[in-house]
Length: 492
Ligand code: BG6
Image: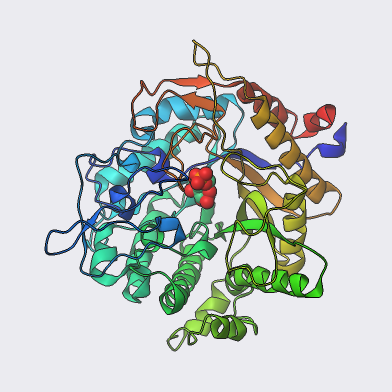
């Protein structure tokens, strides 16, 4: 029975991001974010930023922000009346936070990962003083959580920035962003540091691509690696400052992990897999070990770029501002063959795995594999901060969803995680499943790709009552948390 039980003090909860969950985009003095001009979309019809050239011409999108949309430097964002912009309302946590936190508490969450909206605190990013109403909103959220002994895990920056920093400076491509980010991070540490121990400097930093997450107009090649370098330095400076202001604090940054398999055991496929892995290790090694690894030069050469420009003192700060723990998202694995494009998350298809309707392979053992690999390499505790199944739910007339498929997914992944912890001795601080209350999909902007344990009555165009209704998985997860994982063993 205790085979799956997790160590005492394990943190259980859920994770969200502000622009997918919060809404209230023009309330409480919030400024405009890069994601506010992003349309909804679908797998076939990628979401994009609505932008206009100085001569009034609307830019025709070629690809979605996630596959690195290029935005011409002179373009300005424009709201088009025939488009729907999901970040504006999202699922309105802004007005539902008390109800949502109570639902999370009912499931037994002792941690809730959420991101602070940068432009709610500094509307353009450039103000000297923060927006008080923005700070007060998160005070209310954290105090509400405290009523239920639920602690925050705060993502300082979840793939976003105030639009002005993107338009004026080309986002993270500009070194000045480090100072804007630090001013913002310091404000959060001073305001919430007495109530928050765990912090994430960035979300999925190894996925630095696209205008929305980076504010960089062409976040590829040289600009991508330069932007990443500025983010590494910003993260390290924030960790150092955070430790000074909040001696009890613990820092991670979040990585998009997917286990990567070679399609065959042909040495060329195996070697390709190793190199594809290094494209990700690059980020984790620099932030987790505090220095650029030797293979970084191979990566720059492969992408035909120069080493990113580094300032005097950067190497030292990377060493001083190393992360305390390694946190990551895991949804799926990928399979590669020699010659595949780099960072091709989709890769080749794996004949041994089933896929979701969005083409994401289902692979719980991949999670255990990843946990072992990361810990072997970095030797710091892990934190699984995103995992879950995006699925199309069919609510009955009372909005109740019988989501056995989600229960199976979570059961199998939690079970694999428990094996990594209990059998492979990988230390792990906690698990926050993605989107406990249904929210907007990042990649497609849809509502119908739902992860939640609680159904939200809202469709892809933002229509619906926003009523919250627990799904079948709600009580299931509650039982798993109540037994600290032990009940997983009953189901296998
Ligand atoms: C992670 C992001 O990439 O995956 C989340 O940190 C995102 O913001 C999640 O929502 C799931 O992706 P999607 O596209 O299904 O929402």
